[in-house]
Length: 326
Image (tube, rainbow, N blue to C red):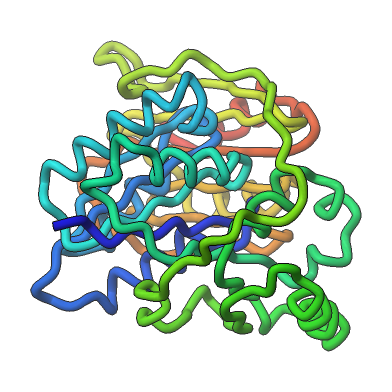
């Protein structure tokens, strides 16, 4: 039997991971789901968050750029491994800087035709970004929305009425029309949408081939036994990322860490960190820091910063050391 599969796509900071966590909480208790997560950064944070909160789901990560590159090998290998576990559903979350049309092409290719039943692609968008030339001129942003059968306008509670009007106008103007759209907050949309059938039409417009740098794909980025800290950088498509992994013995002062993350001007900051108050997931988007307590024990802290400008990574690393027991 073919496995029902959905792509959940969207640009940086639209709330894809939160949306998937909400879906995992609502899934039927007798079902086992598999989730394939891809991150632009090199260290893998979303997988840790989902593993901690996503009971009944097998999580697999492909870090370090978009998993569709290198002839799709990293993605194909990961999907095959997940399919071998016979999941009741497969969710694929491409990186917010990835090329979702390439992921779509892989999932609909002949190699998976007998194993995957691809359902509707769900695209998340922050309505505020539909008025921002920085996003409207980004090819990946447009491509992700173009291949989406269903559009979810997330973070409506943070939007102005003009943003809502822009979202409604944008959805109305789509050709071919979208199957469904909805405004939500905190990434909560009906789980029933996953069973919607996808459109057969190709997305409108010309989707460009992509050419950008990637770090070499690694099976997994680990912290060596004799080190308390490792750092990894990546760049491509006009964005720079820097990620750190800290040994499980490293503990950060919670208040100082919250203050440091609040002051970072980067477009995206994510972390799962051991603090003086326990293990917490930190998520920074549009200058807002959200914090969720985690139940992880003996976890290696991970922090990822992504921005369109090359930031002073050495300076940030020095600050992180000062607010920890390193």
